[in-house]
Length: 398
Image (cartoon, rainbow, N blue to C red; front, top):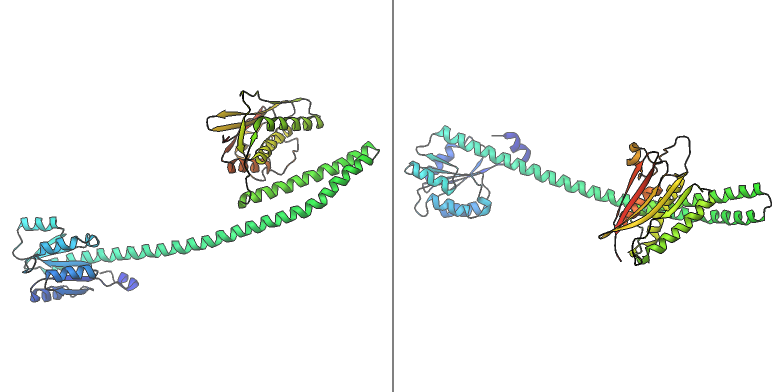
């Protein structure tokens, strides 16, 4: 017997001895007395059934020939309870020792058959094996319960940690929102007065200096907005407001806006174009106008930044229940080994090591998250030295 298991888990198995002859019960108990187990002795088949349904036993030693109800019927009654389907039962008999009775016993649900007169070593050996199996089973159950408790405790700890992390994110967002407001107020003053000052100055050189101040103030505000946006996305505080709007009107607005930027930047070597609208009727989309516009602006700003000559084309294609947008350029392209980093936060890829490109590496990360929040996906295809095409799909809702 595994004493270690008994001591560790305080398990003491019980064996039910069933025989209508009290002397036989006492003999069985005496033969098995060296085993560390408790015995319950009953002289009736009906009493045995009651005991099995009210107590837990490791094993039953069951006599077949009894006056009120024989062992076969007792076992059938025991097996009617689903909880007793796997309870080991060994038949013991003197007159039912022929092979056909043994087969009947096995078919009834017994796991073994011992004939009288009983050989003590055989009896003890068989009983000991089933007690070991019982103890191993109880040990496994206890380990499972312990593991379940550990999982529940760990789940509770993770829940608390998650709530703390979420609260931390909320506080961070609140801090960033407050800081954004506090920084934006003086920055707006700088931009406003820089614009007024530039109009008053007579020297071109001085106006250029003031415009540099104004433009860098605008850049700083854009960085603040980007950091705030990514924080709101991560905390789930960004609310998408959907409405129906004309895609064609949006795209013409984008075209005019970026045509002005291109001319202001003296990028005359670049042709900005919208793909030909293939649909006769104006296309309306039910989505977040402001978010879609910001995603397109991000992709077009990047295209202008990384393109020196050639063209930048943007458009959309309706594909069943989805609409696919794209921005294609003939810029510097992205090295193949860097493509997987394109949408990472605070990641800047410099295809041309001799040039320094502005930005903090948040634009594409935010754009991708925006697209995902609208139920779509974003991807990129690029050839280093030839250009890139950014795609994203959205549900086509009208």
